Image 1: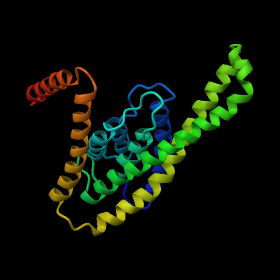
Image 2: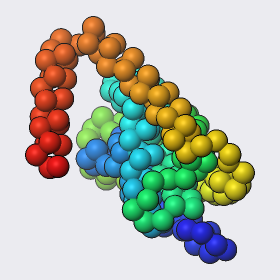
Image 3: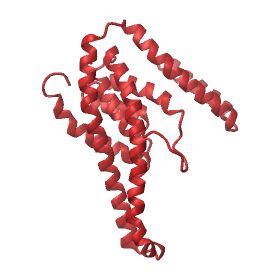
Length: 236
């Protein structure tokens, strides 16, 4: 994604952000909007999937803090992670870790974009409510055309919302990452260690909170840890 043609990636990335944004709430909720998946796809779209994966792992630690359940307000990590994964790939080669400057920018941008995305989801629901209010009688009667029309309208609006968010955040994010890459002077190991320590602290706090709030969490965590460790050992 280096060079003067990087802007050609804006359209496919915005479409990817739109599709991933749909998965958060509207359809199909298949977990492709989780940061570790969405950021990897974002990085892969611009030719550096490993850089996207590393960024997605960091954002996944942050996303553990807020679970999208019920009527709670939460950051929209789907389209934000696509943007962050693509920005993390700035200057990176296929199969390589993200450059430290781009990595720091991508994580910060992912947090900011997720926050803005959460606000846009609230506005999205308000628009749907205004659209549905004059049709409450038809909805109560189970009118098929009205129900389907409302669903299609809501999903289309959500697709457009997430796609616009992706495009509007990716462009300045990529330009900033290029600028920071050229001026970054902190050693790579130290840069990554700072980011990893921060996100790991958030993840640890989230897990600790769940241990005390949800029954059986400790047992499931230990089982998952054991299975994951075994898979890594056998894979090595």
